[in-house]
Length: 364
Image (cartoon, rainbow, N blue to C red; front, top):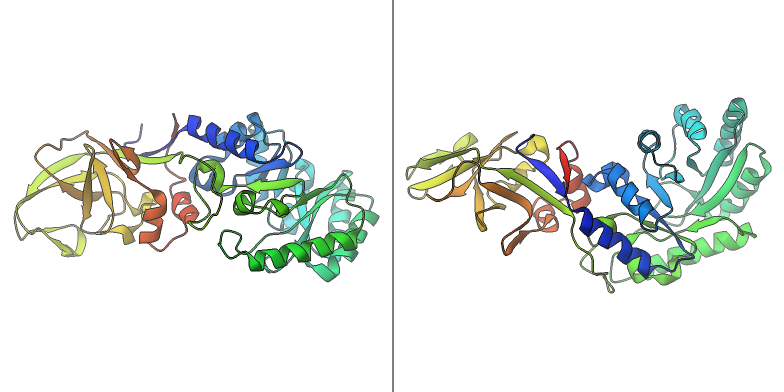
């Protein structure tokens, strides 16, 4: 068992899932977005819990992620949220995954691939309303949908778009995107029986008009708010903790340096504890000298440069080898939040948490 690991509180995750489900009407389907290993929280477990408590679809970034979930027992519909490379179309069709399309040319090519397999490809038409990542323009959406509907080995399952900044207090650009999406839907005509999706986690909290009949939820499941500007944040609880233990304690004399390059000089005689986690495990080196950890319910500042697999922190005579260390999460009355650490190293919180996906996960 590794000294350092990620701990996921499943009771809190279930609380978050149920809270989200209660917030969104039952006639609106929920997709659990578990890309990048569910933002470091474990894609399979997150998907299992979401599906057990009211969600009905799963969203991932790549075919490889979808195949992993399917091979491990996930039978719910799985949507690939990014465009699928042509060399992976066969796997996507065989898996029965929802495949985004945004050009008529790709629709014809996917039709040929699906026909060769003797199996229909399930398709979601992607509409670009301003993010300019994937999607047909609003003006070309009608032609794209008509093409998909005309091809016998393609099955149109829905239309979707991505917002740019629904997490901001100023929603003006998002309202414009919504109007464009509605324009595309109007041009398409009959959408009965299709999945219509625009809302992500931020829009799920603040913009009911964007819900249509399917909402994509990612960070909210993990208890992380999309931003500090949410007008109607749900009462969610963070599920992610990063823990380790002290493996070494020593006394350092005044004037001695700690760590590589001698960037920290002891201001006086002091105790230093070594913790077996570093930037190779995902804990950013840029947090050196800025962040703290919790030992014995007290904040202990990181001293010197964070190493690849270890770091040194302030201690005192009471700290002993084997003492639990919390790098993200609560210990006693104090808490270290992932959002604060991400801000310190100028990173998105999902980027920060996703960096720990190679660590052992323990579900508690």
